[in-house]
Amino acid sequence: MTRTDPGGGLVIPSVLHAPAPGWTAEADVVVIGSGIAGLVAALRCRSRGRVLLVTKALLDAGSTRWAQGGIAAALAPDDTPAEHLADTLVAGVGLCDEAAVRALVTEGPEAVRGLIELGTAFDLAGDGGIALTREGGHHRRRIAHAGGDATGAEISRALRAELKDSGVEVIEHALVLDLLKDAAGRAAGITLHVMGEGQPGGVGAVRARAVVLATGGLGQVFSATTNPEVSTGDGVALALRAGAEATDLEFVQFHPTVLWLGDGVTGQQPLISEAVRGEGAHLVDHDGVRFMVGRHVLAELAPRDIVAKGIMNRMRETGASCMLLDGRHLGAAMWEKRFPNIMAACRHHGIDPVTEPIPVVPAAHYASGGVRTDLYGRTSVPGLYACGEVACTGVHGANRLASNSLLEGLVFAARISAALEHDLPGLATISADGPTGGANAADVAASDGFEVDEADEAQDSVHRMTAGSANASATGTGGAEPAPVGGERADGDGMAVASGEGRGGLLEPGMRAEIQRVMSSHVGVLRGADGLERAVRELAGLGAGGGRAEPGVEAWEVTNLYTVASAIAAAARRREETRGSHWREDFPERADGAWRGHLVTRLAGNTLTTTYEPLEGKRS
Image (cartoon, rainbow, N blue to C red; front, side, top):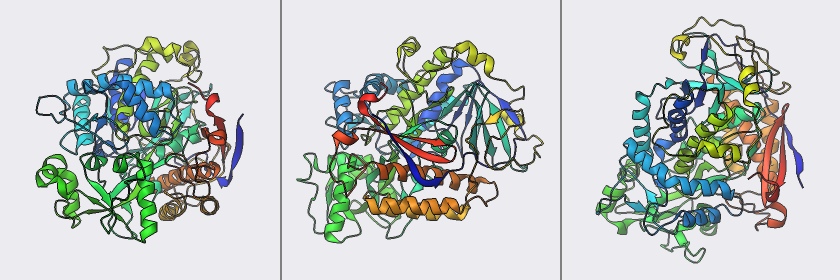
C-alpha cells in the first residue's frame, strides 16, 4: 500500500528562470558530469554515436578526485562477490535492492581490472598483487587504493587520459539548467550556461537523443561537508523539475571522521579516510577511552552511520566539541607511505598525526538516495539516465558501505551504455566497448526496469539540431530576451524546457548560507520531529521570499540547493524511524513493519510530494 503526503507548503520553482538559448549544439548522447561515473559513461557511450560531456568546472574538479580510501571489489583469493554482497546488504539496513547489489559485486572485479588495463596505477603488495586494505563494514580486505590515499585522483587521471583522444567533445565551466523534452515527453537535450564565454548570459542548448546525469553529490546543502563547492545538487534538482522520481533522499551519510577545524567553520572540510581506522587507528574521547568498543562488534570499523552516531553521542555525554582519532601507534613510516595527503592536510592545520591524536567530527559526505533508476540507469523520464552519486540505483539502501561509491559509478555507467544499445538501436556502433567492463546489452531487454518508448517512435519524435560543434557554437550571438518565470520555456528551436505549471522564481544568492544553517541545525546527524518541522517551515519561508533574483550562476545554484534541501527535509520529516544514516531521536528504533520501504519524491507543478512504497512493491 502506498501513502502520499504533500511537502509541507514548500513552493519549488518548476524551471530555472534564464535567458532563451543564444546558441545550439548537437550530440547523440550528452553526459553531464566528469567524475568516475561521467567519464566512464562518456567513454562507453562513444560507441553509440557522438558524445558531448558537459562539466561544471574543470574535468577533475568533482568529488572523485577527493576519494581517499579506495574502490571496493572482491579481488583477493580469499574473498568472494557473495561476501561483498552480504556486507553491503548489512550496511544498507534492509533497503538495498539485492539485484542491484549483485550486479555491483559480480561485475565489479572485472571493471576494476579494466581500470588497470586503462593505466590506473593501484598500489601493489610485496608479492606484486594489488594491495588491499579494510574499511568500516567490510569483513575482508577488499579496498584497492592508489598513491596511498589518492585513489580517486589516480582513477580520474587515467580516465581523463583515455578521454583525451577518444573523440568525446567536452564543455568545461558549464552549469546545466533544465532538461529539454520533445512532444512525446522524452528527454531531448539540455539547456546550459557556459561561464566566461564573453557573451550575455552564455545560455545555450544541446539537443541529444539521450541525456546522462552524472552530476555527483549535494553536500553543499549543509554548512560543513567533505564535498567540493560544485556539489550543489544540480542533477537531482534538474530531474525533479523534469518530472523524474527521486528516492530515499533522507539518507544522507555523514562521514564519521572529518578534521575538526573549530566551532562555526563552514565549507568543504578535510576528510580523514576510513582507511586510517582500517589500518588500526582508534577513536578515543579526551580521556583516552575507546568509546566504540562495546557499542558494536566491529568497534571503530562499524558501518559509518553507527560510528557517526557513536561520536555524536560521546560528544553529548562529555560536552566535547569533537572526538579524537589516535593513530600515533601506526608510526611515521605508515603515515608517510599510506596516508601522505591526509598527513599533509593535518599538518597544514597544525596537527601532526604522527605525534598527536586528530580532532574529528562527522560531516555531510554522501547521498545514498538520488534520482531513481532501474538496473540500467533509466529514470522515470524516457531518454534520461543517471549514474554515480546523483542516482539511486538501489545499491546503498539506507547507508552506503565504505568505498562502494567509486565501484557503483564504474559499473552502472557501463550499464547505461548497454541500455542505450537496446533503447536507441538507431545509434551507430562505432567501435567495440572500451576496457572498463560492464553489462551485456543482450541482458537489458530482460530487465524489469521502467518502461521505455518503442524505439522507432522515440527515434522519429526527436527533432534534431543542425548546429556546428559545441565549442564552435558556444561563441554564438545570443541576445535572446529572457523567458518568463515558470511554466514551459521554449529553447531557440522551439523545444519545450521540461517543467511544471510555473510558480516560484530564483532565490537570492545570499540565501545559500541560510539554507545551509537550517539543514545543519535541524537535518544533520541527529534529527527529531520538532527540528524537522522547523526546518520545513523555515525553508518554506525562504522560498516564499524568493523570485526576486536575476538569472545567474549563483542564483541558479542556490535555487537548486533550496530544491534539494526542501526534498531532503520533507522526506526526513516523513520517515518516523531510525534506519541507517537517518537517525530520529523521537523514533530511536528501526520499524520494519511500518517503514521497510522507500520514500519517492516528485515535483508536481510547484509542490513536492513524498510517496511511501513498501519494499515488496518496489521494482526489481
